[in-house]
Image 1 (cartoon, rainbow, N blue to C red):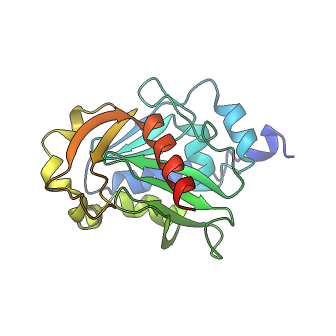
Image 2 (cartoon, one colour):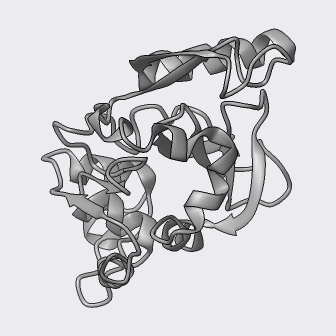
Length: 211
């Protein structure tokens, strides 16, 4: 177990890379200030601040992509109360972000597939995690580009464009019938706003029921 002094790299911090990516972003990216829990979060993760993940965990309270469409977890903030360790009690994966439409992103710890270290997405239109074939740094860089518009086209980004920025970052959309069900779709399913915590617990229950 490395100490906080071994995990912090002042001279070669990954926050420089984060800031460069944010400066070149193709849409609004907001970096929230870090919380008082940042030391505890970094020690729990055991990741150096030399990495982009470690830098986000220690130097930010979280990062909001495209007015909060995607929310990257950091050390926590009043606008993004969960942090990188709050929901991560499983060795199978590490939750790193969620989105407005009730999807979740995680780093594969070995329980999602053979590609350990890669990003997986738990989409609202799927019961199962799906591999994106990229690592965390590339995923963060990708999120700052307009390529997310194409990725989310089938999940109604254009449809919810006018309203999603009004949804709190601790909330997301819930669809019924579920989008993964044959009766459900973006066009016909009813939509309501729920807490992200409620959505995550619901997805875990659904996954357990079909396993």
